[in-house]
Image 1 (cartoon, rainbow, N blue to C red):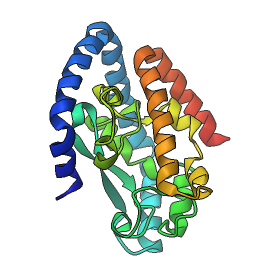
Image 2 (image 1 turned 135 degrees about the vertical axis):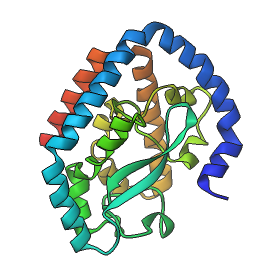
Image 3 (image 1 turned 90 degrees about the vertical axis):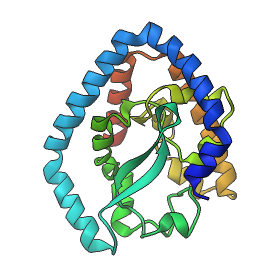
Image 4 (image 1 turned 45 degrees about the horizontal axis):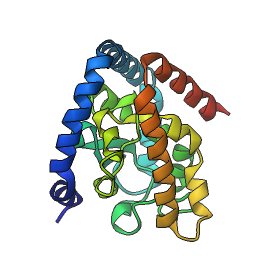
Length: 229
């Protein structure tokens, strides 16, 4: 049975109920902010795809000729309302990395390709995710999307983050900018990742209660500052 099937069978019904209740509350107080947010996502992602197209072509060529396999990697993620979508990135690991090791990636993971390390360090591997933002699967700011197996372990309260679109960045993402390095020092990789995930969910839930379009803009600028440090 696929991770998608496991996810659906274990949590979809409960998620649907909590999503409906929470979404009614959010839309009643966030209509204008959500409109501005979506307009921003569409315009900036479209412009970003055009502006970064030359760089993306160069990176695509480098990925293709430095390791065997496809240029892009699409990973199964859970989006708003529990919907499954494929998040697109430049491939930074060996082919079938998700089948020959843990779903958790540490900084010293041997499955990461030589060029993949630089792509991940500078977040260039996420440039194709602008397409996910343009399509509406994701937003620039929101809780980072997780795989179905991880989402299936969420509590009912934690599932409230699925009432908003997942994002490329968030306050939790900024705090754990060097998450892979932290994980590389852990004795138990899965346990360390679980602790980090719980803290990130706590931060995301706080964002959910206090989110606004202006706060999203501040988070984007904070993220850019972290990247260029």
